[in-house]
Image (cartoon, rainbow, N blue to C red; front, side, top):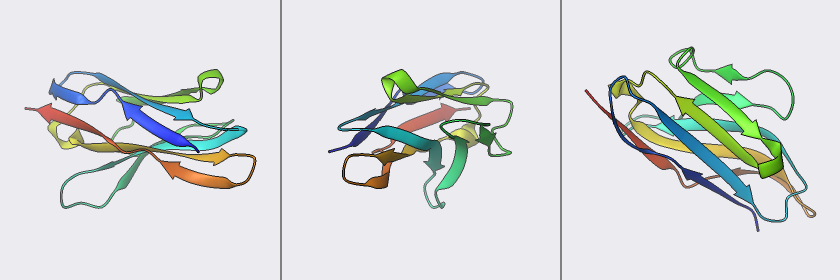
Amino acid sequence: QVQLVESGGGLVQAGGSLRLSCAASGRIISIGSMGWYRQSPGKARELVATIPSGGSTSYADSVKGRFTISRDNAKNTMYLQLNSLKPEDTAVYYCNAYILTVTTGYTYWGQGTQVTVSS
């Protein structure tokens, strides 16, 4: 059974930084594209950043230049460095990943981690 577990969320003042982690575990053969999404109360879930297994990363315009996505394939872990945080970045942050196991390929989601930015 595959699991994605996020960590690193918390409360931070505007202008501060956080580093989120997303660790995949289970009988994993390989991990394809991974991504971070976020959802604020009353709003739809939105894409924040993606990172393929190889190739260029991509970012939502609202976070370009402030957030950095990265991954450590040896650890099956993805990261999101959040700098220059703004109150509007407050949301639950979710990671997802396309994971290939012995039996199937499927896009898994983590449970989410809360990021709160105070003004």
